[in-house]
Amino acid sequence: MEDLGIPELTSDQIEELCTIAEEAARKHIHSKLKKKSIETLTVCAEVEGTKPVNLNVDVDIELSPSMESFNVQKLTNEAVGEAFKAAEKYLRSLTCHTQK
Image (cartoon, rainbow, N blue to C red; front, side):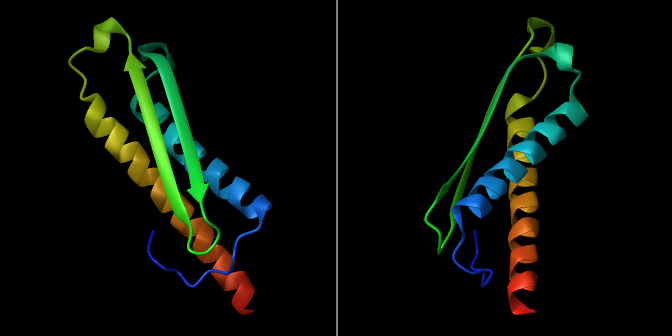
């Protein structure tokens, strides 16, 4: 992620960042697919470092056989993008709070 001028993150903030990213990815996937179409969904967000912060988001989706023509790679990329947007929004909110 780009340098947003955020302070060094606490362990609670790192946990919150990961949760926000994972939830955003899941929300995006569930907005595009019915739950019964999803065989397996694994979303994992990990943070390396506290300053700078490196966020890694992995999304693994296995769909039911009836969805074989669905573009899973595109959906995965979109979900990761949404996770990064949500993470950046959270990090920017931390910047605003520290500058007050």
